[in-house]
Image 1 (cartoon, helix red, strand yellow):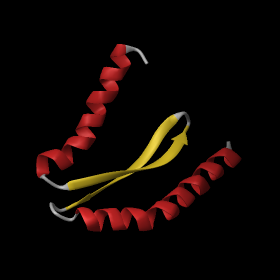
Image 2: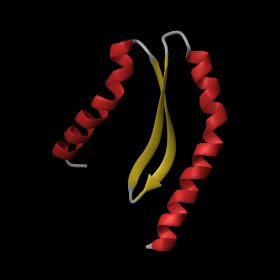
Image 3: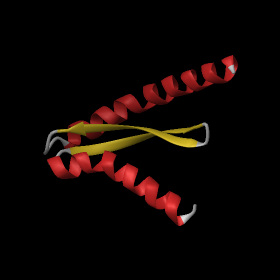
Length: 80
């Protein structure tokens, strides 16, 4: 990746990721795969100290989120 493109990506990512750091919340990102050659993920936040709760929720949601994303992407591919 070129340096300018990487810097642009980092700046945009920081805008999304700094919410947790600035608020003191805990955050987890769940990678769902690639769509149109772009990474897709869902990010969840919970109040400070709720790390265990957040990890439990992420564990429970992961399979369902992956399944739903795959269904949407397959639908997109069949209509294109």
